[in-house]
Length: 283
Image 1 (cartoon, rainbow, N blue to C red):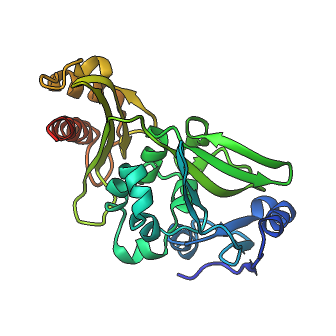
Image 2: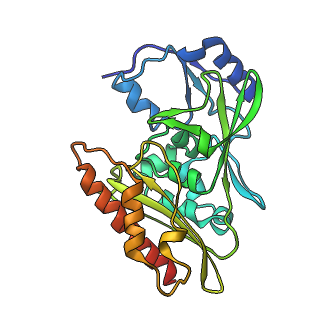
Image 3: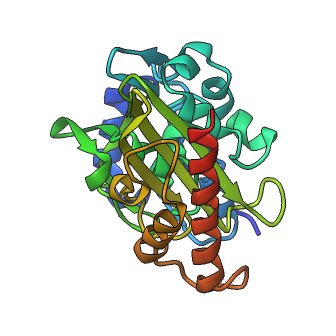
């Protein structure tokens, strides 16, 4: 199938893009990388009357490493962020997750902010935004606002962005010194959506676990954070892996679909978390 007819807009500034959004309201969609939007249009799961193409807006393709965060503009492609050495040094979890995103062709075109705005619970980046306590920067007719990750994801494929707001950047928070991070997922084929996945951050000081937190892929309706500090124990040499697995199984709520049962996904994500805990503590 082909997309339904639409009017194409090509603003060159954020202000112009916001003005178009204000005028068309819920009848418009933002086009950046298009790797989520175009298939939806082609299958006519959505038929917006207007597409606002922001690829000509200057300044949205920048990555900034700050003391407290890594800021990623709305036109930064997955590959650009994946290959950015300063971003990797500041927040290794970004690269650890991005290598699992689809295929190289999609990473070359798809945008990090666009993936977050799509709010698919099967995507890797929403879990990273949640775990890093990140922030989405939005601009609309009423001005600018910061939306914390905890409030950004409202439901499957639904965010707190208003119809006339544009997500111009995201800020991924940086972890304290001594934090080890990792990402693991399981999919039927390389590049497929994960049956289950986990992003994990463990902060150690003098071999004592100060914090252990996880966020998940494909097993919760919206990305959230599970504090595993109590389950894992205080001593890095003797983590309680059974307690970790029990805590994960109790926390997640996976659905059954044509790819896997909910029970299988629950078992799988618990095992992935156990293995990732072991890997991080053995580094």
